[in-house]
Amino acid sequence: MSTPFINDNFLLENKFAEELYHNYSKNQPIIDYHNHLSPQFIAEDKIFDNITQVWINGDHYKWRAMRTLGINERFITGNGSDKDKFMNWAKTVPYTMRNPLYHWTHLELARYFDIHDLLNEKSAEKIYMEASAKINSAEYSTQNLLRKVNAEFVCTTEDPIDTLEYHQELAKNPFGTKVSTAFRPDKAILISNDGYNSYVDTLGEVAGITISSYSDLCTALTNRIDFFDKNGCKLCDHGLDQIYFENFTESEVNSIFKKKRERKEISNEEALKFQTAILLFLSETYHQYGWVQQFHLGALRNNNERMHRILGPDTGWDSIGDYPQAQKLSRFLNALDRKDKLAKTIIYNLNPADNEVMATMIGNFNDGSVKGKVQFGSGWWFLDQKDGMTKQLNALSNMGLISCFIGMLTDSRSLLSFPRHEYFRRILCNLLGDEIKRGELPNDMEWIGKMVSDISYNNAKEYFKF
Image (cartoon, rainbow, N blue to C red; front, side, top):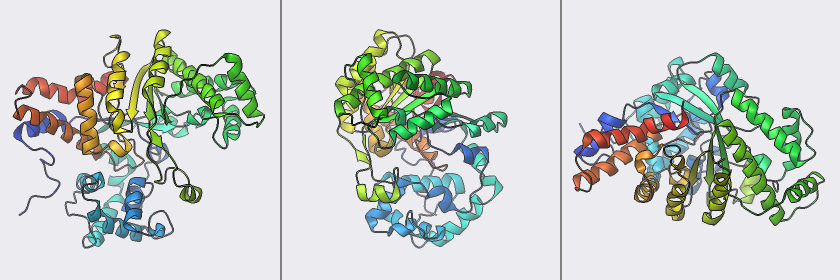
């Protein structure tokens, strides 16, 4: 009988890698400190009708691959049946070889459904029926899916205007996996966006304040930070093309916000000054509350205007941007550190050309007050694959201390994406195992094993104080 593609030693190329993974990493619980899961689905312990609903709907990674193969949009985001969408994804899978989707697909089938057949047009019918029968049972409810992967903690992402009603429900009805949220106030920052004034109106209503001035805006955001904090939130997250830093005065920022509220045009320079001011204000407030701040930098979003107009954001039309990062990021972090108001900070980089920039930048602000206070976050989005994660690990190792790294997260909307933690752990163990084999690291399993356990779980648990 042939060895299944996803086997015990998948990606582990020697005995040292195998020992590190199986003895020190495999059984560690998962702390997924950033994702975009639906708290409603978790609170309601949703049971899905079929595999498509939990696995393909909402997954723009799969959608991009299907479009590249020439699959009609009807069978991607359109009105095609769930089964037809699955069949078209199955048709696509063999063409994804060397894309991480091929590995993720078969890891997820194996770990959740104990299905080890390769997914393709021939196996599609059988796998659809078998996986759908399982996913439509109480054993595969949303909360049980989290239990299956030993998820100890998951952190979703919510806008300041969110009521957090489902997080409140989860706090009253715990089920084993702790669920919290991260505060994502980008819509209050990006003043040039369409709909900004409407959003600010809604924010004011939720915060119980009429927002007429910049000071009002800051008060409203502080109110919401306090509300999130009282509901267990200890993290924020920002998805920005780059960190902003322009010199500004208080009167300038007041004037810029007033112009926007009066529906007058503001210049790019004015927008940057405002965005700098509000981001610094927020970061100082996060420090006051003892939160961890996260910055996802470098995405070039909504490139295809026609398809964005039809389908909206987060549907697969984004790519890597080539923004300058170093100078303004340095000035921003320095402005906070100068006041001793720099919170624990995680910086995620989307452009691999900037890996060494980020790996060296974090060292400028690790001041000895906290282990790994400023982190170079794991490879994300287009870089959460073998090559991208390896490059991030190597840059961090060469220019910082990988032993202090807080490890992997899914950053996903899919409840079936948690094997990405396993994928990362196998890549980490193979990287270290290969260097032990070559004599570049000592055969000290006790110490290197401890480092693997720390990166897999312990460092994140200590860093976030969960």
